[in-house]
Image (cartoon, rainbow, N blue to C red; front, side, top):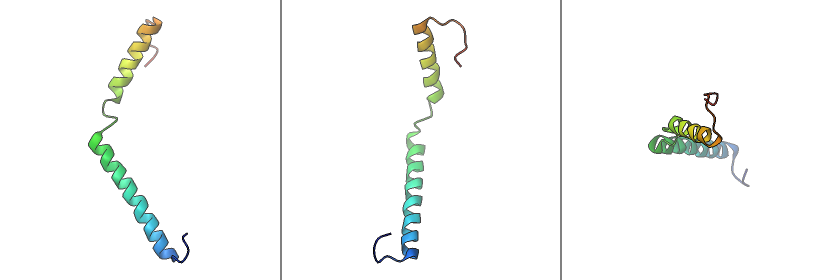
Length: 61
């Protein structure tokens, strides 16, 4: 806690900073949607690894 700042003000600032950070990161995540195509990327990587190693069966799901 910084010198001279009362606990209620410090806690209010900390809570508002944390909430702002969480809401901002959620908004950015919803806007860019980084995990929207994750299943497709995983499927392609598994297929690439199968082709590279010569695996025929579907044990890598």
